[in-house]
Length: 265
Image (cartoon, rainbow, N blue to C red):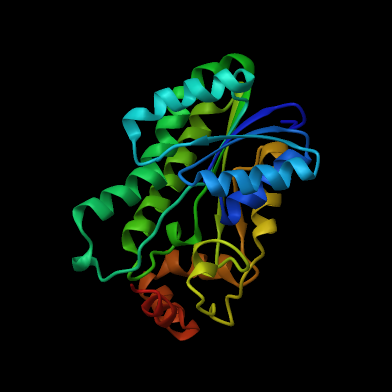
């Protein structure tokens, strides 16, 4: 699908990877409608895009409010007409020993990371099927191999990957397409960067711009799934399918468990 002159609804647009996605899509000629809680962050994104000659509109909204998503879609459509592209980027995570999570914390993670992308897609899909449209969701390699002390996040991203997999099969032969992006550790911006913890040397980090570029590639090429990682994750994931315990052992040797422990708050 071409991006120029399309209207994009992007969640999590106020900071981190979302800002890179917003600027990249705007530079491709899209009209970007960004959603986030932080009005200040949205204004920063808007200012940067407009300085580059792009078009950005902001909608301040708490994506934990599942029942309010219908109104959010109505507001977005009122800005520039029907939504052509949905990018589900917003995400939250909290590192804790599982027994120390509250029920509300688990619910919030699942709502923002999984339920909201599913519900926004449900609300927009009929129009996309009629006019043409595309959905991209930002998942994580944590949805491919669970991460200790980050298990609700891992569960939400695994659900997002499998939901996308099923939806891709359901949408085959229609006017709508769907992709999932699975980043690993990201430097310079985003939740991992904000924790000021070094990534395991063997797995390394990727730049946030690489995620934004993957979004563009997915839309243009109707990619099923794109993994964004410079390390040896694909062979590791294959080994993990054969023996999850072997996968556990390799991740421990790479230092993933120690990194996760450092992120407990």
